[in-house]
Structure formats: C-alpha cells, structure tokens
Amino acid sequence: MPKPGKVAAVKEIAEALRSTDVYYIVDYRGLTFKEATELRARLAKSGASLRVVKNTLAKIAAVEAGVEGLDELLQGPTAIAYVHGDAVKVAKTIQDFIKEKKKAAIRGGKLQRSILSATDVEVLATLPSREQLLARAVGAIAAPLYGLANVMNAPLRGLAVVLGQVQEQKSKAA
Image (cartoon, one colour):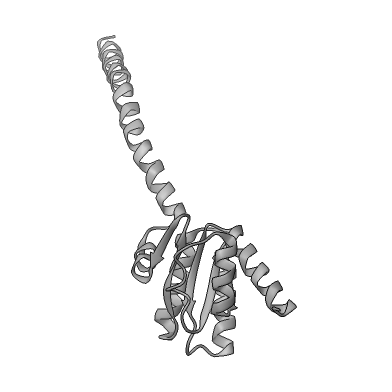
C-alpha cells in the first residue's frame, strides 16, 4: 500500500505536468541550497517554477498525466522547471544560470507534444524572445507600407514644388 504522502506527491506532479505544455528537466547536481534558491528566483521572474522530484514518483505521474518519453530524462537528481510564460525566455534563463555557475545541466524537456533533447533546449535558448520576433514581424510589415506611402506622396510633393516655382516666377515678374 503506497504511503499517502507519495500518493499526494504523484498527484501534484501529474497535475503540474498537465497544467503546462512546456517544461524542462534539469539535473541539479552540484548546486548548493543558495544556488538552487537563486535559480528558483530567476525562473519565477521568467514565468516558471522549479520543483525537485523523485524520479520514481515523476515516472508514475507522467504515466498518470498521459506524458510519454520522459523515462530516459528522469535519471539521477532531477528538478522540473514548469513554464507558465515564454518558453524561450525560460530556456535562456536556465542556460545562462548553468553557464554562469558551471553547475547543473539541462537533460531535455517537453514542448507541447514534442520531447526535447538537451541540444534542442540549447537551440531554443538561442532564439530571439517573443517580443523581438514580434518587433521584427511588425518591422517587416511596416517597411513596405512606408515605401508605399512615400511613392504615393511623391506626385503630390512634385506638384507642390512645381507650384512653388511658378509662384516664385510670377512674383519676380510682377
């Protein structure tokens, strides 16, 4: 008979896995309590939460939540970063922390229906943020419109210049 604490932990992990489409599996080996707290704080600012899990309970919870393919990622000391905001921003936050501290590692994760390897998460971390991509899209849309406005205004500008010159000539003649 499973202990009530473990049953509750499995339900909590399963609910967290169901509540988001994006999460990253982190090997937190080597992190001190202070560093883990710092990582949690950084992730909270990026729209994510970090929870240390037992692999056996996480595997049971994954089955309960209907998530497949996590078994190979759930090896050794494991923490799961549940993303509630921008997936790229959270991946960058984790990668920056790992590079800075030279401890811990990303094992992989899940992005909607796809299981990600550590390399996939690193590539995801190099993408521009959502805001940068939106700014680029707006710029790409606005550039042709700006050019069109200039082309449409050119005849009017030319007419104004010609009328100005005619007026100047008439004022000199008078």
